Length: 369
Image: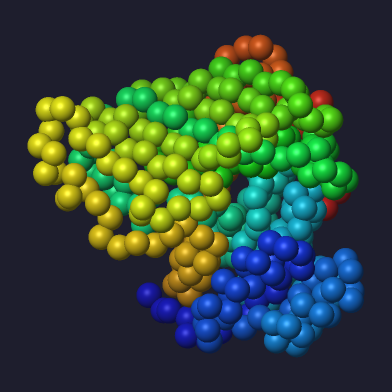
């Protein structure tokens, strides 16, 4: 296997808070493995200012101009959800791999349209799901795969956050056509991706949702009962109405309970392993992670870059990046129709494949080009 040794030319699309607070520092932290080559933003002055601040030689207001001039190896997409698909497809067609903010797309149809623009040996599109990359989650994933904790039985996956009315003054938020959904799509998607990365694929979901406290088109709270292929049953709650904010996941195995409670990120101190009564309590010390890597954009980015250097498909791409969007689509279909939904029902003849509320297609002309 040949490992790339030259810097990965990288362009950042969208120069807002998430780019400046997470993505650009993460790229800078990789040193000479990365060249920050360009910044793209609709606001040309902001693009130029951020480019100067981070030492990028180019700034642009539109993606096609950047792709033609810079010819990047990697494009980092930090724009609102409605513009993800166009930027990702254009970048893939130009030969650049992509790392895109969540939610990946507004529908399963858009996600699958993007997959058609990948090639077997790259470029690839992957997505920001940083919680699965912390050392505690990696440790638990290995333990589940090895059967060290016994059969997975029961789970809790709760994202209980608070967003006030002013949060939704941003034009694209709280609308099906531009955000794709409410807290299940824009907030709880991180914890649900971590859940799925640990327990694998689900088989059926029964959900309800409501709009109780915010003036939005979408829901502001949802509840779901999810059954997994391995037999585990999980409670999933997503809310933007919860004054005491928390992100809480719990997994009850035959031989242990594993919990994590945090807000927007964790390290090992947020996790707890509790042995079942029949298990020697001294066993807990052997379950603890051997290193302490917090969940972060930087940790996922380092793994992504390592995959690209080796010419390999990165994590959180392909089916691995799609499964959480599939769960969200199933949740919305169940909540809107009042019926239990099986994962194998989310096919092209299902209206919820085309949009999260089952009403209209979110595929644009570019996605079909």
